[in-house]
Amino acid sequence: MALLVLQCVNLFYAVHQNSIGENVPSVDYVTPVIIFLSLILEMVFMLLNKKRGLQTSGHLFIFWFLLMVCGIPEFRTLIMQHSAVSAV
Image 1 (cartoon, rainbow, N blue to C red):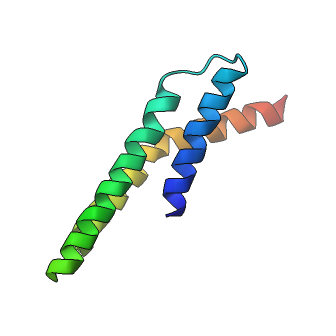
Image 2 (image 1 turned 60 degrees about the vertical axis):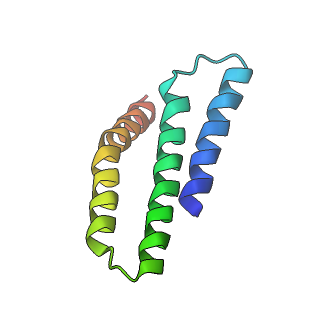
């Protein structure tokens, strides 16, 4: 649930930045929406599998692993931006 809220905050932050006149790339709008929808879909699958009595540990592992692997470039970029600002 916290990840859903975080994605909403990211989206609203991008909208706010655009409303004050800053140039916001379209990826800042699309990424939170895609992650939000994938988290909702994962929760639906998890609840359906739980209702049917199926084990979903493999499915969940693959989902979270891919989410982590796809988030590594963004995390690296944030670290590089922070260290560039700190060096100045």
